[in-house]
Length: 246
Image (cartoon, rainbow, N blue to C red; front, side, top):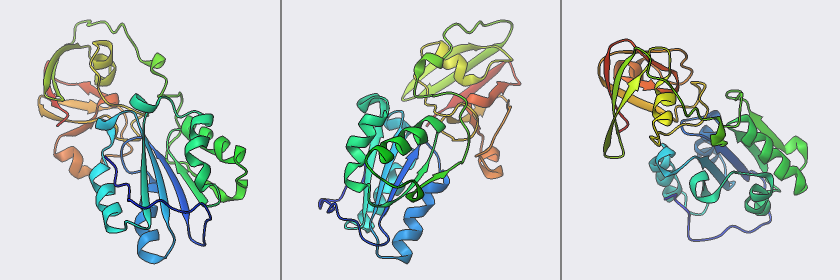
């Protein structure tokens, strides 16, 4: 996975070189920078893209294609929390050390941005070269799975039939409980990141039944027309809803 070029980049930065760090699935503003930087300049770009696991990397194919088209100018590094653990300051510093002389742009959950900034500052990067894209503000650290509810009650709600990674799960869906909470409480390893309707990590598609979303800061009208919803914000409007993550 990834689009990592064969050649490694020298440590010495040059004008126009950039370090980008993005967290969570979707298309935060910082991910638009590689396209414009590669098209309009000569600088090299390193992108560290942090996600919960491999299934959460929704931009994997686009980034691979972009890296293959610029093998000596774009390096994509993937951080998967399921494999590498939490992106702590010390762990990030070890990965980012070769690139601290570059202009840095950071976007994602607030805890990740804080950790990246602390890591870069600990490596001697000046504060005026670290830019944070405040795409959304996260109320809690969602890399910390202790925030996941474990005892959602069924109440008098309906059911959700959910297809995920080739398996079908049928779970009780209380009317006032978001779909993501129901799935996690049932032990289903559903993808998520911000849990605030702002990152699209939990995007899935309704194939039968109806739902409503409490909040949506990322899906457009076409997405909604095609049945896509955010599981962290979806509540049932019908007794039975069928959902797919494919």
